[in-house]
Length: 224
Image 1 (cartoon, rainbow, N blue to C red):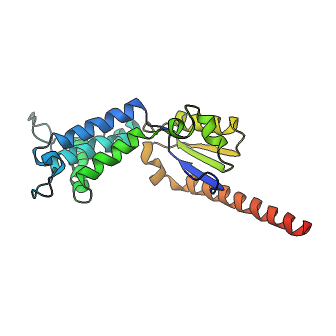
Image 2: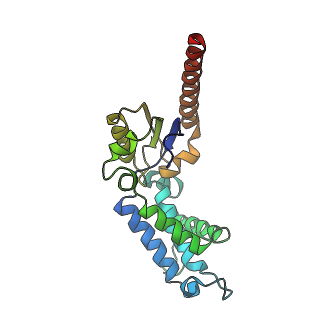
């Protein structure tokens, strides 16, 4: 939004616009909320209600996209809580229990209408359309920022291919670009979990950026 005032930017596990798949997951989550009888067309607080069930399901859906197939297999596999009951309304698998816990916890700290509008805003966001007239390179031509892009190998919410798309566009626009794809089994949540390599990359980038800025200042002083 203010390309002229940003000298350096670190872009972590991100995308220029949400994919159709991401929009689909968000849409299912929103439908879970508005289908809850307690949603009351968004006026639930005035009526002393909360669409807790719908919001919980929305969170469960969203949380799946933050993980990876491998991490879920390693953590839960097909483990059962207390054996098979053959009862469709019982929680039997450990992964079911985990998602249920995540959903219930989320309800206590997040508002349903906020979830609707935040996910809708994410779906509408399109860096290329808004700032590049359909050309991602044009977006990066509008700034002189240095960029560090970080992606994670098993992130299927914002996969490495989408980071590489931005990297390619920034390079084509003549920007100074660094990129690292970190191997991890933790899906999109890798940026919150696998922080050691991530932190080192960010530190090195910021230190190099600061050093370059100091060198430029010294040259100015010498000329003066």
